Length: 383
View (tube, helix red, strand yellow):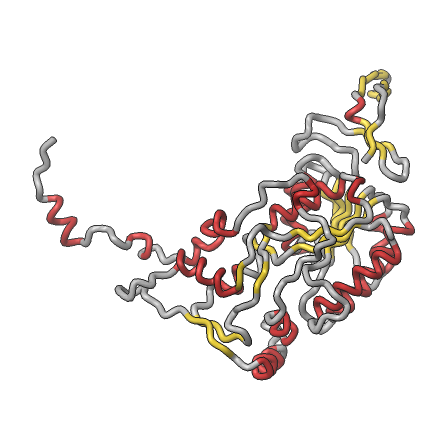
């Protein structure tokens, strides 16, 4: 966002009194469409940046962290929602009046228009990697993305940030990757200045990576979990999105937000179970860890049968994605282009996210036995 070059006085009316406040040049920001936003405060929770941002998918894994980062500094945040029970926790991420909820429906264009009508930045974090009885992956990743992009353009919003996926490609054998790729193309056709962000598979407290690979001691997959990715911390992605939203130099660019290290699913599982399990072949908490081969067609057939359950389970497209390694677009920019150098390694934060799977008795391994403790209590120590 552009900053004004001169100081000016702002007049405020308080009852019958007129108050003149001096506003520094750093407090006046001009958006790409000419709107003037005045920030108030030193940047804390009770400050106001003057900007209004809409976050579609705010109650999702990435969206909740982005909403928190925006609201904690006083950016007025609009949260379109469908389920009242799933959005309530977002209210406390900002000060009173900062986080505002707008009920919307994915097929109701008017509700989408209302969600972006007064915004300076629109983040689209909505995405689906499985089909439901109401919405297919194409309905969400293509049709809804198109509606949001059109509404954003019609409202004259100066910044649109679309969160896609790694490996997004219209020609992919995976429905998810293909629909994400088509969604990117539609966004570019509607808003050429849109910023496309492709995060790698993210890990964090509520992720679909560690929570998928960690709890299972034995897994049967089409490639023995040989899929290779560049896992990235969700907090780093949210930090990058916040920076992109307020930085006009990112207009029209594509970012691949990948972690610093390439790991296979099998290697990640080894790291997790190295923390949570005992593999010493001794004691009641010794386990046999393993990843086993399952033919692709059989894996997809089993996943297809699982779709009859009313809760979310492994789907055939997830099996297909299991066979596709992550490929980074060399023409895309990354964290370093945003000035973000301190991206987390998975190994550095892994214990925080998997320690709840660790049996408390495992941490006591190597401690003196009850008999040894009793003997030590009867010894007379001299200093």
